[in-house]
Length: 169
Length: 354
Image (cartoon, rainbow over all chains, first blue to last red; front, side, top):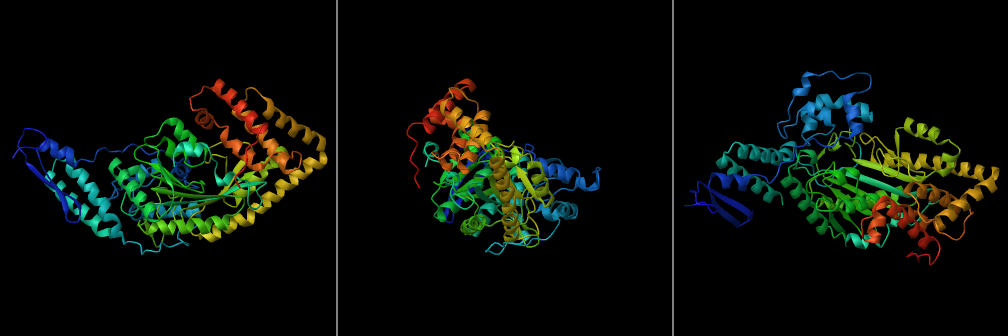
C-alpha cells in the first residue's frame, strides 16, 4: 500500500476516532505519519513574567534564595523544573502543587499567610489526582513519542487519549 | 455581536448608576479557573490551547449565555488595543500568543478571557458599589460553566492556578474609585499605605503596573488562600466606605476653603474640553477628572456623570481610531480627540439609554 500523501510505501496505519462509532483511517509513510501525529505547533517559549510572583518567588521574606537541590526537581506530568518555576513565577500544571509541595508551602504561607483553602467548592466532585493528571501525561507522552519517531506508540497513545476524552464527555 | 457593535455602545459599568457612584465607578470581581485535564496556559501547545478554547465555547453555549466571542489571536493590534482600553482584556492577553480570546456579553458586564495566565479569567462588573451583588452574579455564572467543565481543584488548596498568588479562591474583588480630592490634598499616599498594611492592593486604571489615570484607582484584595470569598468581599465592603469618607471630606474641604478657586478650575477644565482644537490624552484625562468632580459637587449642572465616564474610555487612542474608521498618528489623534470632545460636550448631547 502507498502513502496517501506521496508515492512512498505506507508503513503506518492510523485510525482516528472522531466520536463514538465514527473513525477515519489513514495510511502514511514515515514522514507523513509524523506530520499527521505531530501537534501543529509547540509553544514552549518562556511565559511572560508576573512580576509580583517573580519577586515573591525569588526572594521570600527574610532570605535570599540560593540555588537549591529542589531546583532540579521535575514534574513527571508537565516536565517543568522547580528552577523554571522560580524564574518565571508560573507553574506548568495542576499536579505541580503536589510535586513541589515542600517548596511551595512556605511560599504560600508568605504570600497568603495561610495554607489551607476556605471558600467555594466546585459542585461536581473534584477528580482525584490520578484522573486530573492522566490526560496531561498522555499528551506529553504523545509529544515525546512523535519526537522519537515512535509512531506505533504515538498511535496507541492517541487512541487512549481520545478514549478517555469520550468517556469524560 | 462584532467589535463594531461595541464601538457604538458603552459598558453598563460606565453608567454612573448604583450606590456611591459619585466616587465608585464600578465594582468588579474576577475568578481564575483552569481545566483539570490540561497543563496551564504557559506550558500548553497550540493544539491544547485550541482544545481549551473549544471546550470553553461549548460550555458557554450550553449555559445559554448570550455572548460574542472575539478571537484575540487573529485580531489586529488596533482591535486588541480597543478591547484593552475597554477593560475587556488584559495586557497579558493582548501580547500573548496562540489560540486565545474573550467572550463578552452585550452590556459588557461579563468578560471571560480564555488562555490568559489561567485557562479562564471570568470577570463581572457592575457600576457603583455593589460587590455582594457582583458575587451573586459571578458565582452563578461560574456554576453554569462548571456543568461542562471540570476545574482543577484540590480540597486542601482550592482552585489551582498557574501563579501561586491566585490559588485558593482564585478571586480578585475590587472597586474602581475616583479620588481627585485625595490627590489634590496630597493625602492619597497615606491612604494607600494604610490599605497596603491591611493587605489590599492599589493599582492604576489599567491594572498591574499601569499609572493612575484621571485620578482613578483600583483597590482589591491580594490574599486568595485561607479566606472565603464572602470574607474577602467583606474586607472591601468594610474598608472602602472609609476611603469614600476621606475623599468626601477632602472634596468638602476644597469647596469650603477655596470655593471660588475650585469653581474656576472646574469651569476652565470644562471650557477647554468644549473648545480645544487639539488635545493630548493626558490633558484630556486630567481635565475630565476635574469636570467629573465638579459635577459631583454641583459646580456643573448640564452634564451627566455617565457621559464623562464614557469619555474617559472613548477618547483613548484605539477608540478614536475605531470611531474614525482609520489609523491615525499622534497629531491626527489629538485633533480627532478634540473634535470628538466638542461634539459630545456641546451640540446634541447623546441621549442615554437608561
